[in-house]
Length: 277
Ligand SMILES: [Zn+2]
Figure 1: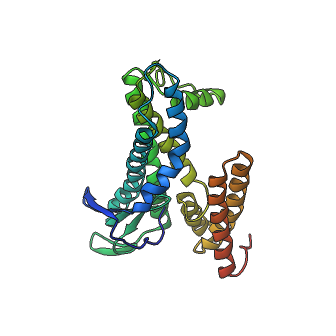
Figure 2: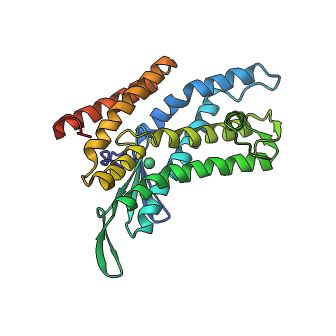
Figure 3: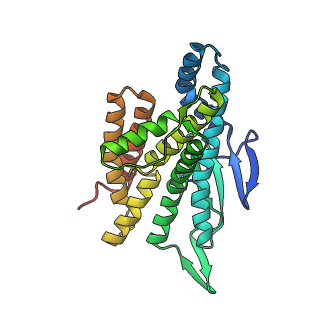
């Protein structure tokens, strides 16, 4: 995501990574703990049934939040490294729902002594780089798990889904089901987050990455700034995704996409009505 910067607070954690200033707000930890609570509870229940017992729901929750932190940070690093590829430095903020990579000096950069503005293509590449790097990290973790001989449930699920649509990937996902709660939870949580997070972000709903990609694609095709088209598609997609989540009983995600859809509608109204196709 690339939107305005959330207000700094004294509870923020700040550090530098690869020359990028990083700020993590306290709400990032709280919201992500809430998002992972049901899964941590489920795993805790499952291990309590076994002979070895469970390390406890709090341990699982801590591991979940840690996985979310690393995964979302890699996502934002994808945006920041792409910005840097174009000669633009940026800072990263992880806040309640996710992260933002904010260019420190706008979209203007200098190449061979000439001042240039990022083209629509450049901005589509930057928007896609975050989800792609995060997704690549999920594949890397799946490879590591397979090399260790550990079978991860989420990897097996996705591989069988891929097989159903005719894509068979040999070797990946083989191995034994592990009984070690730390190994299982680390792989399961990390890969789960690093598949779903980029998929959500690629939905064409502004201000998610997918919404930015739609905006710049529309700008190129229609020679406008593309915002009106992005808000229109964002509103429709947002409502559809919210409806789908309501149907599947995921109220939290439904509310999230409902509010995204509403903000797209409001942005459209500010611009003066739906786009004319
Ligand atoms: Zn992003």
